[in-house]
Amino acid sequence: MTAGRDSAVGEQGAAKPVRAAKKAKAESHLGMVRRARKINRALAEVYPYAHPELDFEDPFQLLVATVLSAQTTDLRVNQTTPALFAAYPTPEDMAAAVPEELEEIIRPTGFFRAKARSLLGLATALRDDFGGEVPGRIEDLVKLPGVGRKTANVVLGNYFGVPGITVDTHFGRLVRRWKWTDEEDPVKVEAVVAEIFPKSEWTMLSHRVVFHGRRICHSRKPACGACPIAALCPSYGEGETDPQKAEKLLKYEKGGYPGQRLKPPQSFLDAGGKPAPPLGAGPAAP
Image (tube, rainbow, N blue to C red; front, side, top):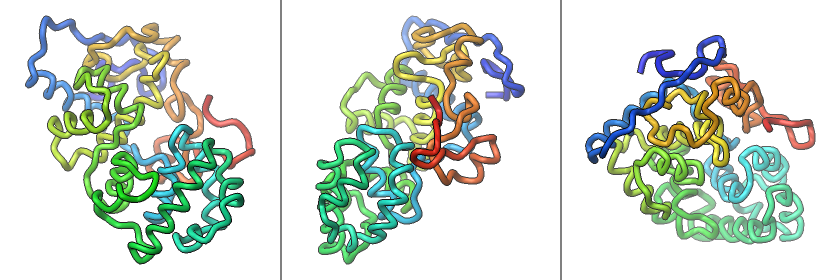
């Protein structure tokens, strides 16, 4: 997909008309696979800086942050974890935490009592069963309290370099809009998508799809008129199609707002992205 073609927003940010995907009578499986791979290549051009949006410095921090991210935003997790890891830098430290004190620190992430139980449980398991180290196998990770396949794939793909598909709400919503699958169960979605793409693409595909879902292809009001892959989307028209109106719906760096990480990678900053503010320092993206 060449730069600017079928794009709603040009290099200078000016809105341009988009061309919707042609209505096909019936798409073959092979046709869907080819279209899906075109979408992935296009998203790689749109988001060359796609990355995990949780701040972390080691696998323990990534594991804990991912558990905390359930039912809240990565931004709120990133604003909470500096104090958390200052208090409990290792699994041994967290396993010995006073529950009420741990709950108070993670309160901003919501469901703090249940999350505290999960963190205490996984920290204890890491200390007692894995020598204080985060295991690098999905079979071991999913045995930890509060850790499912999504969390395990995040840790494996973004720290250990083991390819994995992360099916969160954004990923599931978009692959259904794109008609890659109609499955609702995350495990089934993961299996279907894994058959479409080579294993080497799984981790970055996950980041690109989630980035697109958070910035353009929103749940309630997708910005169809500002979507760079409109020509490949069979669901074009579910959201705002007017380019000027759609452009106002863009979020994070695509809308000129800060991202979700307090310490984002340099590639994100080089692309014009802005760090998120610390907790209580002011508003971030709407």
